[in-house]
Length: 446
Image 1: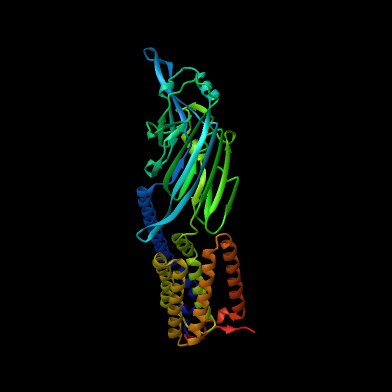
Image 2: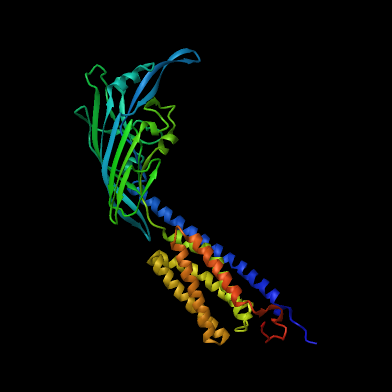
């Protein structure tokens, strides 16, 4: 009686192949860790560029800050203490353009800009009187106008502030506003002056990295920005009222009212919620389409699926009697497929993702196809497995570059693969595989 080797049992073989596919999760996890490490290096490079050029900028119009002296209850009785009260302008208009470029640090790059901005607006004299009528003694001679700028190191030039027709030079800020650093101008206020409004204007050249946000610090804030960037992303609390884009530049117009914010026109500095203030900002990001590392990360997420499909193809070769595949050969093919992702990552940093993907896919198809042809002693088997692998990589590329429909494409592709597998194996006598000895193959049922 012939003794049947348990390694030839199709059930044990299928379980073994499944376990080998799961083992491939280990090198795939290492590849994903490597992608994360390289992404971290990219972040460090961008941070170094931002430190030297200017960080993501947040700006606002001039805010009037007035010390108010009040009597407060202390441990030894009533004492005089100062608190800062702020007043926002009635109107604020910011117009300007962004001159953009991509700055390199080693092999990494990030978009930077220089914004040439014109800022103008006005304060209401009635609002000033209301600020003084809220209790306490406003120290009008010590009032200042503070202009919030997130990273003052990015200021390339700043004209004098023209206020009521008089030029007043800016100086370093003695304090920020709502957690945002600022530069400021002293303004000794005379409430007896016969003015209904106090107009202001100044020009600013500001360098920054990746994004520019504006705080709606007025009863009505209008912002008009243009920029030479093909992929702007309008971000923050408010979208533009109108915008146009083409392949080389964008134009956008925002209009925000005080009714749209969670803080008022006037208040005390201690009561102002800095987080709410900064969250009310809006503006533009110099968006870059799906980056190299994000694309590598996406490709890696589908790695176990395509390794499993490749193993299923090898198993199908064996089930159909084309090639008796040893577990070591499964392991060799799996390691080669994992190497694809390392090669893709290394090449994509140098020549871009599309070309890197093409080169890595051609290399792996050639290696695996050639290995199969030599191991099976059949060029047809090698060509068939190589062609199947090429089809898999074409599908994977479509999933990686498609942002909106990757899930739908992946689900359909998986369904088609399973249906094709069921069709090809519909007549295999699974119980008959391996019964006739080491050289036996499965029998096709009629």
